[in-house]
Image 1 (cartoon, one colour):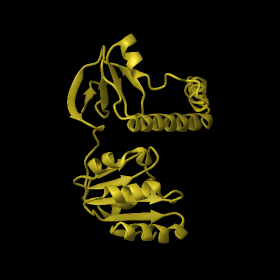
Image 2 (cartoon, one colour; image 1 turned 135 degrees about the vertical axis):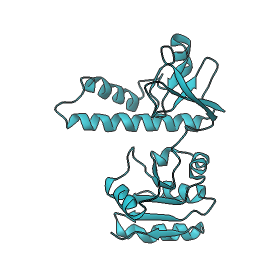
Image 3 (tube, helix red, strand yellow; image 1 turned 180 degrees about the vertical axis):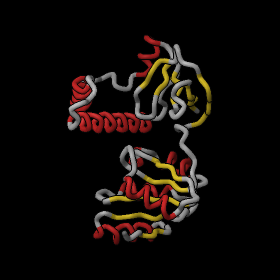
Length: 225
């Protein structure tokens, strides 16, 4: 079980408290952290490339991403070595970190996964942010329900998905369904048979989704906009 904390000045973020002797005991979890971090860096680079007022560290992050992709950065997830050098770390879910030293812990939770916002409705999102039109649709049609986004969905284990779907009233998504792996993982994780609604950008993929939902005995409603 891991320790997750919030610190003063970062009230909307959870960090894993990583001290000397701690390890990433689940290699798949470590791999998923790496994937999320790589994806976040790449999206940031893409945004900066198209922004003339980009941050000055654009070149540094571009170089860092290329190092990751070519396998040159061998210490990418060597948090144990960083702890030995700098002391206890505060690791974000995307993999970036800062030092505990100089920060004041305001909240602590113990668990196997980073804490997530609890809500009536969850949006399963493979990117960092959900599509605005889908969020607007849910807000308009379920005005009295709270909504949370479970981002980087495809990089999460079924066990983590199960934990985050606990207590949810409605599971939603908008997708092209270019790959079905994440969707099957959703169906496998939905052990409570929570109703699912989704919008498909590619209408030809709707039948594929229906067949998969039927295979796992799930309730899938396709939204037409």
